[in-house]
Length: 236
Image: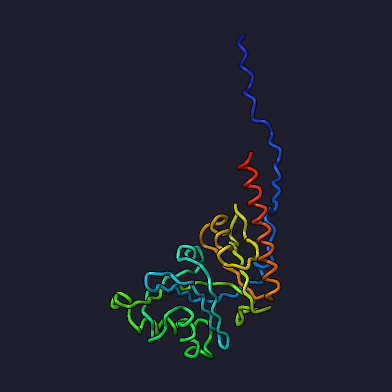
């Protein structure tokens, strides 16, 4: 008498798997406080085939701030909200660099809000003509706008007159969400480009000059340690 084969064993019962979510990146309190956007106008001066220091311009009611940097257009392009406005000749005779450009517009935008002031400056620059129609001009201004984030909607350098900077990328999953406060914005963007790429938020606040110098000294120590390690590795 034939017997039927034993039934094929079914799959073993699965034990429910509990997935534990862990936060690998602690929340940075600066992401909760630096939420107010401010628009900065950026001008890069080209004079007699030379590139002069890049200036960040900020106007907001009674605030008028000009910050000298060594930023390039390529670095600025990593900041969220970056936009190229154009290249222009001096709006009036005698404006030969970006600091003079800032002084030229300070009285014009006095009392205006931040975005209104920036729009007014751009309108005046566009009214002065494009550099393509004035190729014999010795000075030209490459103009951009960027967005930075501060603690308050009306004041950018809260807490002091010396600006410090920090990059942030809140939606980052695989990389750090923020960097560290730095005295120089160039260092911040160099670190941000390496760690997080494009689409960065740039945080800004004011501190005392003493605090800014402490940040500089702390960074110089870190740079010195990195250099010593590199030298040791080379010697080995």
